[in-house]
Length: 336
Image 1 (cartoon, rainbow, N blue to C red):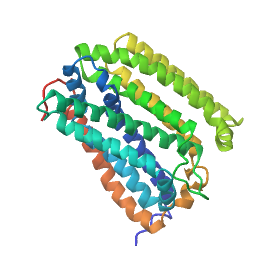
Image 2 (cartoon, helix red, strand yellow):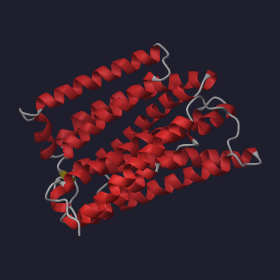
Image 3 (cartoon, rainbow, N blue to C red):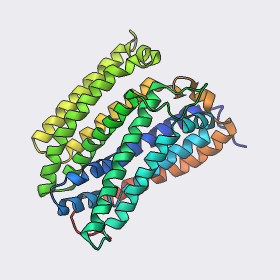
């Protein structure tokens, strides 16, 4: 069997691959979950059709990264998978049910023959997006707090912090979705999306402040990681970049830019994700099991490494190509 463990740090490489897959899922599926959350508040049926058409070519491809992240965790860090899955079994099931309802709505709304049927799929699109977003945030909040290895409890995720992060992710996705619509639509829909982006930005700022002050009190590992003398400078640098990005985002919305609000929101998500990674690294089960301890055998990782080297560029390539092909503004006309 091939074995690259002598020349490569395979647990670290696969930790990076899974972290990348999860981030790309959050970013790419985040904006279409965001437009689903905004969907019922659109000013007209034509606007709602534009909203759905703006993400219709991308939503199913975006979920490739969720599959890659979950399957990759199972294959490369089986010990972590065996602990994380039972802990978050209920919120994961709820998230998947939300994604199913949203996916069905995409396919059936355009084929509805009556207003009543259309309303059913409108509610499914909104409800599925809201549920999936909330439970993704709940999983994230519980993960940051730490997972109990000794006594796995499927209800540990029910706590004030994880529920607050669930609400925070709904607001964050709303900002991502509204800035996406600013870029992908025009006229009344774009004007409405820009107004909603201001509201979402206020909410995002509020939750970022709350979570930032709340997190160090949850776990001594988080406190030491961010507020120790050696690491506080990294915290200050991250704070400076975050504040600067928020200011530039406000300026781009006020000056009615089309592309910059979405790009700056992406960068804001990158900063938040970087903060999360720095909080939990090198643990794959915070704050109990490291990447090295949870990794599969070197020969298994080496075999999987060959597959990742081949498939990851292909996935990145067709994702980029699909966004290039469907660039430009969305219309309200049926796409199916």
